[in-house]
Image (cartoon, rainbow, N blue to C red; front, side, top):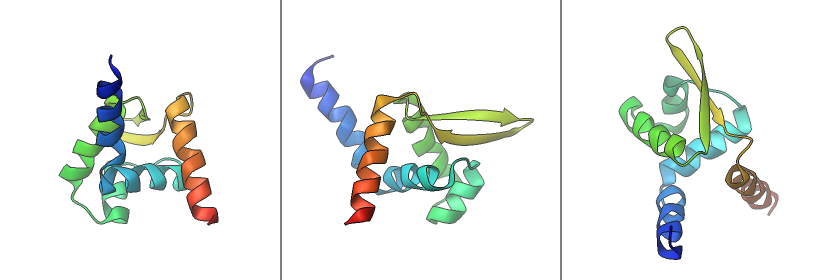
Length: 94
């Protein structure tokens, strides 16, 4: 992967207001299903599903399944997630 591909991936993730709101919400609340995320950030279920798939592909979000329900959470083993959490903390402090 080249530097420009890396940069594009970062821009794709952090360049979306909805994805940033999802990341922040999962950081603050821990685990939520798609409906809970959609309700709290006031976007459609379909849009949340699309954004979650992108975040999953990037390795930022994981889920656990309870029957038919998936609860999404941040992937705590990802160094990128730790960087995003630090950014959220720093932003909230100022």
